Image (cartoon, rainbow, N blue to C red):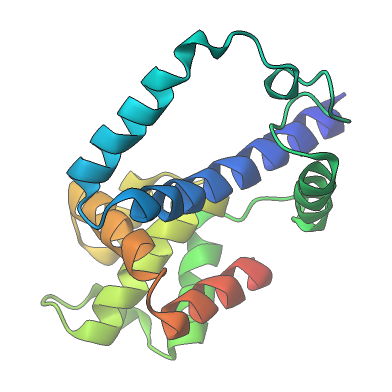
Length: 179
């Protein structure tokens, strides 16, 4: 039973990750300005509120009703969830993996200032802590000598930047694979 709950949680985390990426991608189709895009999306949804109940959104035409999408999409999400590790790393493991990818030491990661490589490494560590770790952002914040709110803002900027920075996206994927 615990294994099933863990698998379900992994599926949920993968869906949330994809949703964050998909949300940005969808909104960008509507406008370059996030505020305008959100307004246009709200208008679009509002126009379709009278369409009534749609079977495809209630799992009636799908192989797994936890996931909205066609069967091909559902199978892809579940396959990716199967590939995720059973265990979740702690903050220490995340930090070690980030330092290895960025080829920096702990002293440089904790150093005051906004040196680009160390700053990006801290942002990626915060993202990985939120996405994959059993640890909390407050624990990472203590480790890197920053405020949790600073790391939260850094994660938001990082997620936006990964869409247009292929090198960053590759590092994030390498980290995901290593964890």
